[in-house]
Length: 160
Image 1 (cartoon, helix red, strand yellow):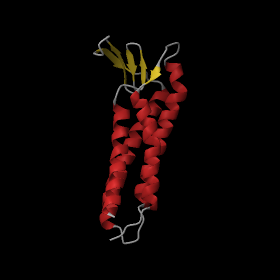
Image 2 (image 1 turned 30 degrees about the vertical axis):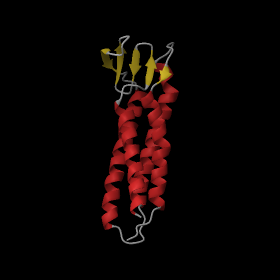
Image 3 (image 1 turned 180 degrees about the horizontal axis):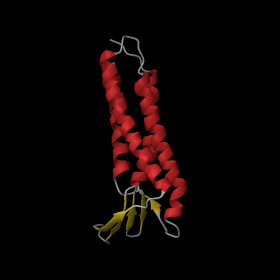
Image 4 (image 1 turned 120 degrees about the vertical axis):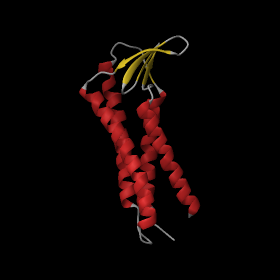
């Protein structure tokens, strides 16, 4: 039982790290000498050093992506806190419904943020040859892992 709890805790912390990194790091779109994320656009030199950063666009769709990514981090942190609270207060045989609900909600938030960014970034970066950065890919990796950990929490029963 202890190994199961440690495995679930490890999965949850891994999802939380993926969400933090994908929200903070400036690598959602990468072009030749230019990186873009949810918060700023940066110009880099040939050697990779950042030369200049400016604030991102203030368009509504980008603000919705920012908000849903922040919400996904908040829901995942809340879920981890609730897991520890329920671990010590839940009666024997009880299920971790609240923890699972918030973790599934975090997964749905990151999925909606990445989907909106996928659909709408063409308006923002039109006529530019780009590729997706690692932070964007981490957001998509965090989505199924968050859903999986949320489903595991819902199925999990507390034992002594």
